[in-house]
Length: 404
Image (cartoon, rainbow, N blue to C red):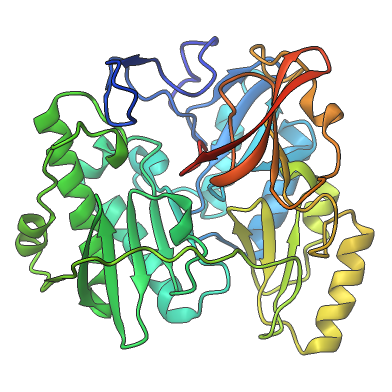
């Protein structure tokens, strides 16, 4: 297993040398990507951290049990959810890496080629049907089958959206958007291309390869599309042609900005819940069962899809509410998020999880221990950044994309 991160002081985001024009694309990455994974652990003040990518967002009941057991046996008894639908284990002890890798591998939570573990960054509409979910499975297979994809950073993000616009609004680098006519739009670098549904996963992979070619040409070490210098061409058409994907450029196509599923029951009999401040105990995690599958969402929550009718959905919601989940859209804790804060992060100026309070007003609220604002939401939100122990600067900000 790869060793833990050699730089204990690195708290996630590698150093950026700003070229001074104030745009996201005007940066040079002069260090490698130190983003943690399930195999390359990150040393935090509360122990090691493992970040598990879930490219389809789907966990089987067995995988839920394995992760809960790992949290109890190896970590601090909790699981954290990120704004990319990742699951983190924290408080891991020295020397636990091999045992954790063995448990994850046995549960089918690692790719066959473990070099690809950190590039499986994908968010998927959690209420999507089988066709769109299959795109995610196929894209993950393609990602893990190519050697060149290991050049993608641990921050490069794919979105697979079923057309409702929920994950399309999350600022991914490559977005697949389902269309009613049985086709898909591939959005990358401000352009869109219409492809057949069957070609959608291959088209997304070709778009990622086009980004890598553009990043090499720019020579700035860009990790994400928005970091490319202004005027840098991303020749998606040429890469689609090489992948034998028939594509039609679509002028003026914009990504929809749909809402995430609200806590509660949905029209198809699914149940949606949120984890308060994005963290659950192992007992809460197990309380999601029984379920055919558990879908992890990028809004720090879970979907239990298509239960056996409205009565079953209501019963599960009552049980999950009792377990401590947010089960109602009008809960004052819905839309409240926080970074790790103290004692887990040495950069934090306060224990933000203890300081966080229910939301007041309409905007989401994010509590940050320092100006890095790790895990912030996208769009507009009320920004509370610690300036000292228990003191915060409060502003309203608008930023596209999220940090984890």
